[in-house]
Image: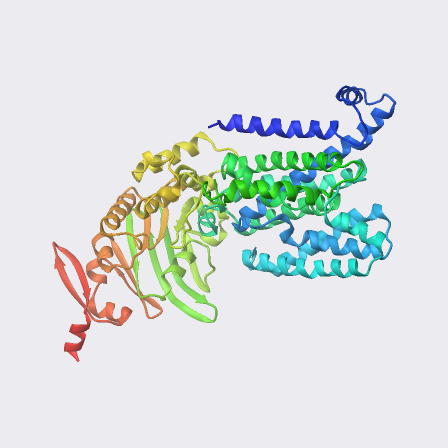
Length: 333
Length: 264
């Protein structure tokens, strides 16, 4: 119906519109003119400037980054494992980070240290999962899924145990983390995660041609000259770095990494070059809009981002894919 | 000109030696059929020849170069293997599938599909008579058309040695003949084509030479007439065979149960 260019133009517009909405929406009543003025005069003083530059802009930027990271990570893993049910948390990143953060809260670790701790623990868990999934020089898809699922279950029960024992205040901060939230995040958190996310994106870009060949299965991919083991490690490395960055910024925001890649493939087809960019744009738009909604529905209470996205997104997804009349395949376009 | 040479190759699967002392040459311009009983190691031999599996002993060289010294992409520009385990890709057009064959002709991280890639893809589709199928979704093709599309991928890849594992296994008589004629034509263009075939008479009718595997070794590699000797085939397959002349060509027939009963 629409040409490729038109579809990308629409997705880009959607992402830009979502970023704008994220900037205009918030607890304090700022008009669009105030926001625009503050944006174009960064060095001016005043409440509007402070709100826009130190609260809303970093929050929108973080939401966009989290969306891009989770959507791209989900896209890479679904393609690599050729499994439409895979999401970025399969590698154990979120469960490992969750357990570390829960334990740190019990031990009374100060909150600024929690995101780096989560990042390191997530990365460590993913390494353990990868080590278990290794076969020969490459990775066995089935072993990866089994290792990821079982280690995630183990670490999740750690979290449950900690929650069970914790006093109410501590439980709140662990819960906020488990249900995903951008509250209280700022430029400093974004800055220290950015390098890892950038490396993750670079790996992803380099792996896309191999990922495209892997659509035909490992046997044909190998025949046409893909170094399958190298492609698998690049894809897994990229997905892990991106997920760990996202998780340390936002906690566990579910749904995005599972469902955005499906929507992206549906809109632009399964070619990784287009589907990766489309996933990134859609992921950014979805998380930014979700965060804006979570801040503005019942102020001053923020609805957990992961919960909100699941409430809005899952029914939409089910309607799109599983309605009886439009029997559409989940995988492919 | 594709020339693939196996010298003293030994293949091991786990603890078990599958094949040993294999000396085999695939020559440019020639269709070489590999036949043998189930489980003898035909697929493993092809995978080793393609450089996918290590050999326990011996060497495999392509135009004099040891395949182990080639990078994945260098190897793919010389040799390709279309296995019998290919999966049907979903959500891809026939052209997209065939275009994948061009992977080895760019840097592995390069996103750009060049004019040469598109040209090679269209030429390959034309060569296998699928020129009008480029925009069709791959999963709507019939088995015979899919097999031709996989051949087109190998042609777009521009490898001079094509290794094919049971290219006619899911095809009815007409499609099988079509694929085998195409394979022979592709060999005549100068490529070396090696195909594992189950049907001995397909091999007899189309191959220039037939390699018979049995008993853990290469029993013969010769013209159909010389290779399809009943005694040799009996050694390989464990059943008796009769040999006929049909229209100047060799045909063989495994003796049915009745013939076996009569003999005892």
